[in-house]
Image 1 (cartoon, rainbow, N blue to C red):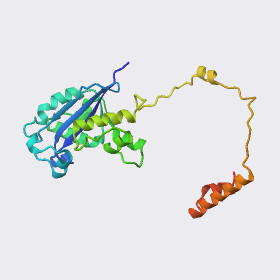
Image 2 (tube, one colour):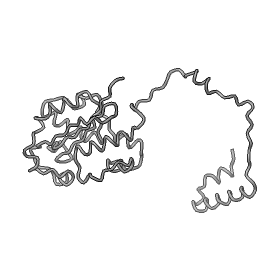
Image 3 (cartoon, rainbow, N blue to C red):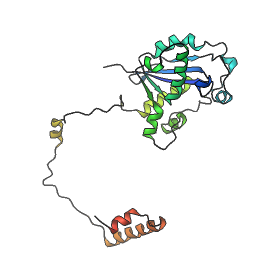
Image 4 (cartoon, one colour):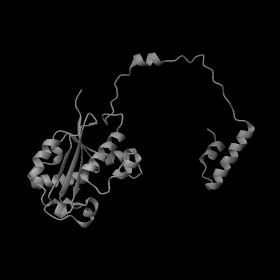
Length: 241
């Protein structure tokens, strides 16, 4: 069986926009091999060589003083690339993290991050498809899939990657691939095995009594009154096909 290596990745940054000079300050990665956690994680704090914006600092709590003695991105880039190379990358709201990674790679004269990995999966896109119209933040998904995030007081790249790994596995439980394969030819042997002769089958048809019909019509009338006449069931009853 072919080995499936997936890396669940998250970053923390000094702000929201890399075009304004904001930088990555933390990278957290969790490894899955054939959909099982391996414990071979990657976690680095990074000196961004600038201060965090006030809003970002309130989210991650990583001060300039704490980050001052940490390595710059260039110093960890080779190790990071060796870790993610060739893997399928899982990110929540992937465009955000990719924009920062690609900005860091561009500073080093490297190709875009996507060129070093096999694929990028965005769990936010998947969550919106599975739960349209609902909140699909990481916290909301943890609540929906009953994954404890009580220890998440501040955002942290490794902690968020660990939570996202649990969410990703819960969302995709029971399937190892998001592609759907359809057999070109039906399995005729299986069809023969489950075929049933219904030629002698009789069906007993039970009709509603007059009292039941009257009660049903009264209920529909109440619905029509409450909805201003927009009771589709009453219309269907009045105009049977």
